[in-house]
Image (cartoon, rainbow, N blue to C red; front, side, top):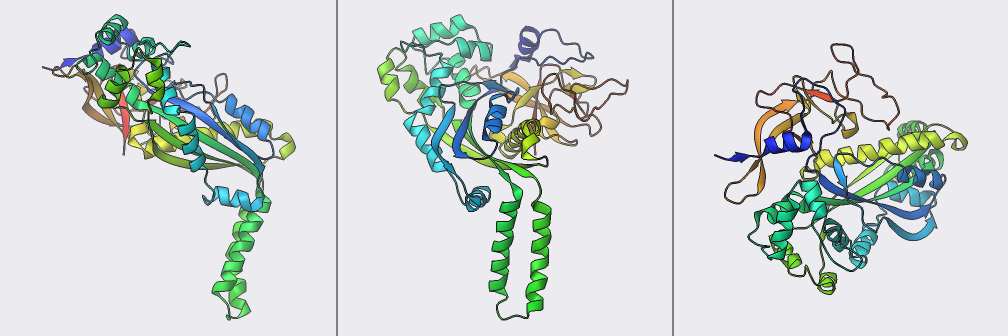
Length: 408
């Protein structure tokens, strides 16, 4: 019989969580790890406000913060004209090559690995962070490393597969601009293209073709737009890479010669409109930027399975978890109920599906706000109390401490 370890996760990590209790405290569980990098490339209006908002952005709580020295990709500042903004927002202008170069030149993969093993100034490693995030016995891990049991040690292999292999880094670029000049340029380009296609046709036909173009211009010209593009990368980690790393555990110079690869998972663009004047828009820009970034993460999570977070079940009657509108939920989304078990042959952690559930359409938690702020949509339970977690359809085998993962 498979030895379940969700009881350990529930009692030793989550604490005593009543099946009927409602709590706002996020339990501890094995999260994916994330580093976030800002791309500072172009000059634009309100840039100082946009950058300040980025620095104050609340880190996504579904991931462990994986800080590394490289936090900003600083490119040569340029001021984009209207055509440059159009190229940027339509995808014709892309700086992915700059990102790839920065990853290589700054050995960002090595920085992510070094952070996992808490590399000190003199190049030494330890397993304190892995023990902390994975709830492992630090003494056992240290003994395994000391004995160089890198290939046959289940705890180290498990930590690599469960933790290190789920390490991500994002690169985000912003642009803030007035809509009218951009909308006008797009309008003019569209009219020129229409004129080419209708060359030799009666003026009436050209005028008719221009009408929807002018309507689109009128709809797009007001306000300002905050545009962002985020690239998501994942650290490549497997047994052979782990073995290579452990072989240089006591050799900092040899570690520095290793190259740890990152693979591109995908990219996501987003734009939000600010209708206030530029002079009074600081607070609005901050709010829109937070929503903008939240939406980017929500869309990346829903698009790429590897980036989907797991969230622990808080209660079972009703079935609740602290995930909500911030992560793109609106009701009806499907989730697997996962029980964390241990493979008796390999000793590694794995997840077994014990049921499926859906988000209750009437009880979706609005968590799209900062600490100290009230939610825009206040949803109340049947007792008239504001909810602090999303409700799901009941699952017979669900228990507090099991995990939920969204599926398509």
